[in-house]
Each structure stands twice: as C-alpha cells, then as structure tokens.
Length: 447
Image (cartoon, one colour):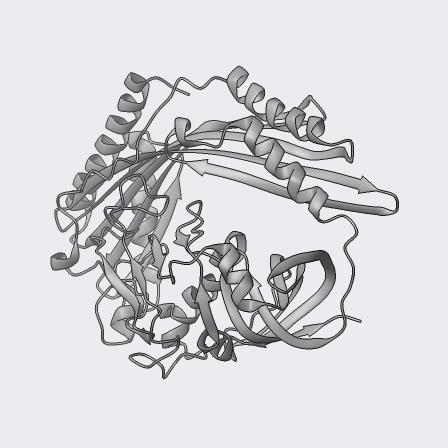
C-alpha cells in the first residue's frame, strides 16, 4: 500500500481537481453543478493449492461531473484529470443538459441537508501490508485448512485484499467535503470429500483495521470445519417447518427490506410495501436503527453520494416501518425530503432477544437451520420469496445432519411478521448487523 505522504498527495489532487472544476463551471455557465472525485488504490491476491494464481493492483481515479441546467441534467465521467480534459468533459455535460428532456424533480439537494463539516468516523487505518504479507496470509489460511483434516482434499482459493479509498465531493452550493477509508478482507473456500460425498464451504473476514482481521490460521480452520460439517448432506421431505436463518445469511434476509423501501421502487409503485409506511411489518419487539456514524463501521459515511449529511434514524421502530430510503430525486417525486441514502444504507442495527444461538436452537426444537442461500428468487413487487437452500436439520434443539438440494418459499410479509426471535450472535462483517433469525413456519420443498 502507498505511504501516508502519497495518499495525502492523492487526496490533495482530488480536492484541487474538484475545486478547479467548480470554478471553471462558474465561468462557463450559470447553472447548478455537482463534482465528485474518487481514488481507489490497493491490491487483491488469489492463492490456490499454495500457488499464487493472481495478483491484481488497483490505482483507479475517476472524476464525475453532473450539470443541472434548469430542470435538465447532464452527467459525464473521466479518468483524465488534466485541465484540458476537465474543460472538455465539462462542456460535454453542459451540452447534454441543454439537449436533455426536462424533469422537474432533478437538481442538487436542499442546501439545509448538505454536510459542511464532515465527522471523523475513524475509517482510515493504513498499514504497511505488502504483497508478500498478503500472499503469506492467504497461504497460511489454506495450509491450516488442509492440515486440519484429511477429508479436506482441494481448495477453491484463498484471497486477500487491501484497499484505500478517497472520496471528495463539491457542488455549486458551497459544499466541498472529503473522507478516506481503508478496507482489508480475507476469504477462504475449501472442498471436503468422504466416500461419494463432496462439499464446499467458505468463511471470510473484513475490517477497517488490518489487526482486526481474523488470524489466517483461525480462518483456515473455520473454513475446513464448515466444509466437513456438510459431508453426507441429504434431501428432506417436502413439508412446512420452523426455520432459522443463520447469522451468516441474516443480512441477506433483511437486505430484501432495502429494495422494498427504496425510493425508486416506491415512486414507481413497484414494491409490495407501497401502502405500509407507518404500519406494522415486523413483530412489535423488533426495531432496526441506521447509524452511519459508528467508528470504523463498514457502512459508516459522513455524507451520502449527493453530499447529504447522514444521520441516525429508525428504519423500523417497534415493528412499524418508519421511513423510506430516499435520495434527492425520489424524495421530490414523493413530496418528501432526502433521508441521506443516495448510494445505499449505512450500518443497520437489528434488535435481538439477547439469547445465545444454542438457546435459539432449543426454542425451535425441530426444524431447518439454513446456512446458505442460492438464486435470486425474491419478487419485490409481490413479496413472494423462493430460494435454494443448504443447511442442517435440527431435532430436540440439536443439529442432526446436513441438508441440501431443497427450496424454501413464502411471502416476505408473512415471514417478517412470523419472526419469533433473533439471537445475539451478531455478525459484524456486514453493514446489516444481525444475529440468527427464527421464523415460525415456511414451506420447504425437497423429496
């Protein structure tokens, strides 16, 4: 990774470029303009069977310009930061805006919502991690997985990545803010074999600080244990049963809510929650808080992609849907104000019952523990849900045997209302932080 001085130079270049573009635009045309510059630098490493298969270096710099000419919009991007290039693409953006159809709802955010003093969220933790260190990390994780058990007979790869991102955003309303962040990730996927059964599984770790990553030997052992646990997987009969979504996939379960309350889907009337704002969609004990200001949070941001200051808010309070997720455009379409969610969500914290995962299994007693989902079988217009699944059958509160080649189905409205409990084994590796989820009943399709 580049040194602190080099990163500072890159940051200054982005700030100067955004500032220069804003000044040039002011001389050329009297209109609103938004300029953002982003720099991502780092590397990715892929090791398989102790052979380095791929090393990828990233040093990507891009400039985005959006011109709002009355009620018309023109957007361009470029990787060339020279003055001549900036002038050229700025004129292109202006020409596009002049020849675009009018849309009353386009424009910069309300100045009252903009961020003019970015909070330090402790997202930037550079390290002297070298390519050699990254290869060593990935190799150790894979070797430990092989060493754990003879049934681990192959690898689908061990990965390591280290990246720094610099974001600068300015507009003609006087905003010019920046923040930078680091992200370190490791991933390991192994294949286990016993007799005629062969299964794969993976584990991963991600953090803003390199020292907070899972140790490679621990990551390798966990991956091997997960793959071995799947050996001998079988189908089960078609039935209705209680289901637990494990902590590893609970974020996917709640990610369907993101799509359902997205402003774009709301104003287009293409969501099954269209008439459910301020109505109960979860059990009354369940709340979801969005906190963009968690220090070192994976989803933390001082401002969204439009420069709107992020803030702590309830998404769901006591089971009741409290807000849509809005940017400036779709908020105007709905006659509301931006919620600071241009570009996505920021650290969802889902409430739980402060019980362990083992207690959750006991509460279910008999049913299916789902640990992996496959496919894209979620219809946000109707709420219908159908996905391939793998996991374990549970009886008397204990895991009995692995299960695969099944499909689970239902409707998200019923599934959300039928959540009985959430355990406190919170997965911190995602921007949706949640424990394992127990649902009273879903359809399982098997034999």
